Image 1 (cartoon, rainbow, N blue to C red):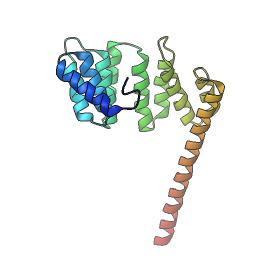
Image 2 (image 1 turned 180 degrees about the horizontal axis):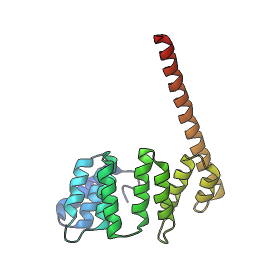
Image 3 (image 1 turned 180 degrees about the vertical axis):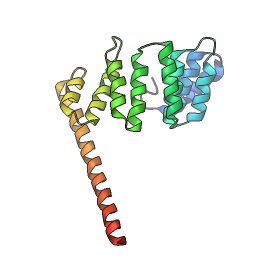
Image 4 (image 1 turned 90 degrees about the horizontal axis):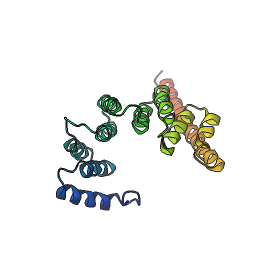
Amino acid sequence: ALQMDGDADQSLAVMRKLAIAYPKDRDVLAAYGKALAANGQFEPALDAVRRAQTPEYPDWKLVSAEAAILDQMGQKDEARQDYRKALELKPNEPSVLSNLGMSYVLEGDLRTAETYMRSAAQQPSADSRVRQNLALVVGLQGRFDEAEKIASQELSPEQAQANVAYLRQMLAQQNAWSQLKDQDKNKAKVATN
């Protein structure tokens, strides 16, 4: 609850105390690991999540949490291996499929990301976040009308329209920066010739 209120430091302090009081409780260690990761402390987060895991009874949520931390550390291959391991333990779990898709988004592979996102969104237990991630990936590919249609399944038409407009603006700004960068490169080439 503290983390949702935006007080990550206090959340981390509470979770640290709980982890000390209950060093073998998997749920506590997993929550502590997530709190550490939210605070940018990835190595300790990874350690906490790994300590919560038991090889004889692996928990898909812990494997997925480990994958998300590895993704944040830039270890994409290891992260994706863990996402797939989590999917072996809990096939078609929308949150894992969505996170695996987001891993590909971070790398710029939007087509692969969309494949995983669509699969996640089609699951009966998919939540709003999963469908919003799909809308984001579709929008990032410039398919704004389709993105708005997906977003409007979860949001009011006005909110969906505003989200897509923001995405359009963000992509336009990114494109403008890319064009400026290319112009600078061309000027540098002309100057050296």
